[in-house]
Image 1 (cartoon, rainbow over the protein chains, first blue to last red):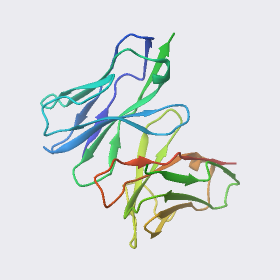
Image 2 (cartoon, one colour):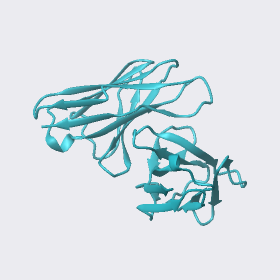
Image 3 (cartoon, one colour):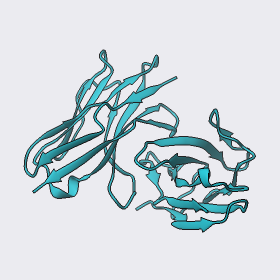
Length: 114
Length: 116
């Protein structure tokens, strides 16, 4: 069985600064996907970034980038130039190939201060 | 773009009654949809996989007779919470993806259920 762990229940960062959210996971599979989702107060789940495990290159999406360490089973999210609109819950998630079933971590509540 | 719609967004029901939550894919077909439950300030827990035209697959610990799932068409899955109790109060979210394309997974806006 797969598990996803987010050890930071809450984080805060000042506007324009950089923050890193941690995520570790456990699996015996070799091929899988990892995701970061954002859930603002509206509760809508928004995909932030996706990483395929077979790709060594870390995924980036504008101000969002990941540090994927497959051997260490670590998948952290870096948010650069933080904006007030980044305030939300952030969930790390694991997904196997050929399925859309996701296993979510417990989430990190990020507060961006002006 | 592809949208997943949930209805209702909020529902309050009395203990012992049943409530139905709909999950619709608005402009794509989905042979599979997923139902999650989210407790306050907690993570999303997968409840079941809804399969069009066949029985749903439930995760361990989820009562299939309590949470009835029907996926009668390629655009609609329903979750019925039967004989609801206050402990069933939660936020329920569905997800789906366009089966015919390599597109991202989409989530509904969720349904907040309060059982009094």
